[in-house]
Amino acid sequence: MFRILGRRSSINVRKVLWTAAECGVPFAHEEEWGSERSLQTAEFLALNPNGMVPVLVTEQGALWESNAICRFLARHARRADLLPDEPFGAAEVEKWMDWQAAELNPSWAAAFTALVRQQPRAPGQIQQSIENWNRLMTRLEQHLAQSASFVVGDTFTLADIVLGLSLQRWLLTPMARPSTPALLAYRARLLERPAARAWVDPLVP
Image 1 (cartoon, one colour):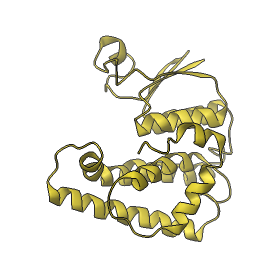
Image 2 (cartoon, rainbow, N blue to C red):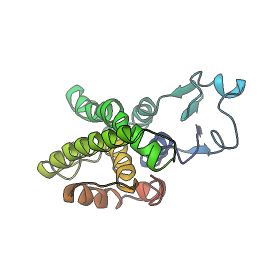
Image 3 (cartoon, rainbow, N blue to C red):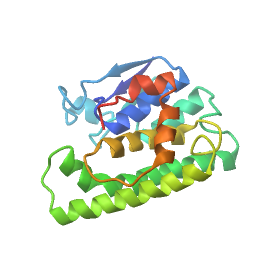
């Protein structure tokens, strides 16, 4: 059985939990890491020297970086629907996963930490973050308005897990947002999935 370490309030931990549930792999969730248990202990740093969650502990060793863990789980479960074996198909999924990590995540940092985590930020930083975040989510809205049911065609993939959680965070952050009917319809489709209902808490951004 795999061990998944990390508090549920972490969006990156929820990525891994949702993926594991979709893959049907047995796992034990050790939620206390990052809340009651410090990530700076020698025990945890031996698993991830970066001192961050999530961590997946397997018989072969520990893995960190949420998107890498999600890819591993899909391949371990032989779920080519979540991450295709064919190179171009896999790249189509992974480009959206990388976009989420490299472009979308940095855009919301100032707005989310100020408006949800209540950490001090300069007003100009918050406004710039909101504008950048809305701009990128509008790009995703336009893509979904022109595509099929999911981010990469008609098949649910790992891209939908990472972007579905990003959409959840955007919708629950108290700020002005543009109208996005395609994104709202997309979210409704995602929540039809049992694994999404299990790990996408409607109150946790």
